[in-house]
Image (tube, rainbow, N blue to C red; front, side, top):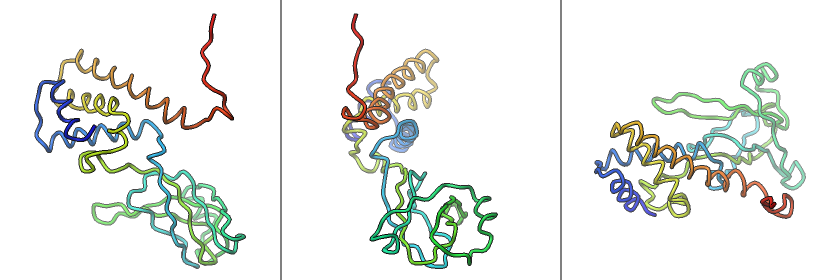
Length: 219
């Protein structure tokens, strides 16, 4: 399902038309709800960030939302072997490594941010400060490009039911629908998001070799 088909499906269901701006906003709100509810492999991204010896921080990618894992690597660690870092808060880093000139192989990281106008520049603080030109292996959570601008997305192509139902909830709220209508759309969304969670938080987290196949009891 592409963006045009999504709009037709929603408008036919609610028997109402939306401006291009309004429908785009409703769609983005729906996508955000879905992506924040289910962990899918398509929401993971890898980045290799160069670290500079003597510099305690490194800027994060602009689409970064949360870290899954952070590791440092270099030829100094045995041909590129990863050394995974432990997550700490900024207070821990400032107390444990008050002097940025204290260098070594980083063991900990903390997330921090600096406001730049209306944007937030996110960065990682490392402790201790890198004592060599390591690289940072970052596996992180991000929100993919919206179907509004991409036209086709994984969600629209593979799980259009949850996308349609999520937009219907936002559309009903926008139209100030009656409570029974809101409840109906919400229930449909909950049913479809459960199917997606079975995939993202269930099947994608196991395999039949390690976990065994799904079994239904018989009588």
